[in-house]
Image (cartoon, rainbow, N blue to C red; front, side):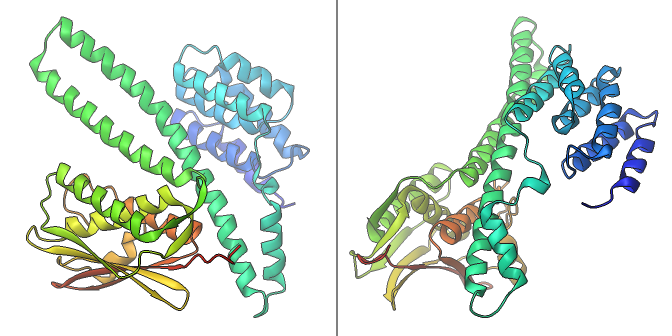
Length: 373
């Protein structure tokens, strides 16, 4: 186990600060360190005892940080402090204490405990890497990445929903007051805040999609799902006020099949098609083609917009990065499509673009056959 004595000493020193903001930072650092050490380590007990002392701090922000850190505290005194914080006068502190108690009861996972069998297999392969097992190591790495990717998105959406619920209640209370005591100056900002709330909810819904496990696995015809995705994309962009000449589907085989979550696949394609429509001038057609070759199918979605630079293509796969000029471009469509195509269908997405001529998105996937597992 790594020697953490220097880190503990610095954190304990920082916890003597008279600034409540610096105390919050130090408590967060203490929480991070507690996640990495065994409960039997002396530093874990030392930090826990120091954190408990902040459960009665005058600033609720400090008490909340202490409640979050005590999730990883050791000994019955940490649980007693959390139970006291459950009755705190500030709802944010109560919620933090309740969450920490829930996590503690089911056994909060520490960093050093997170090596699941798949991770262990990956580490073993890396140590004895050779050309024969590179493919297996890559597959294991993708599985590990998918597990933690979903875990992060799930935790993030949970926290956002809790906080949005509190904000929503506060906005409703303010709006009720304005109904009793009208104030035209305040009404506008309240309406804008509620509009922003709806946009945040949409972001959370999309993040929640990233965290969900694949749905029912079934064999389905790609052409039929592709047609549904095209129709839904047309409808959605028109609702948003974007005019498009048409989306044209071109393929000569209707019998090509995939195996997996059909709904996720359709949503992934719909996101890519919507991007193509929104990138195209109103009088231009978006072409969607389906071709089959050598056990693989390739879907190509071609727009005739302004094109993309290399930097824009790279950024397209990053969360919350959007090249759209309209304010509601959230930068989640392509990452969602990437997650589905890459992780769930073992395929790939590739962009080709030329400035002032347009962009082509290629989705390449292995075809399902009757003798496939």
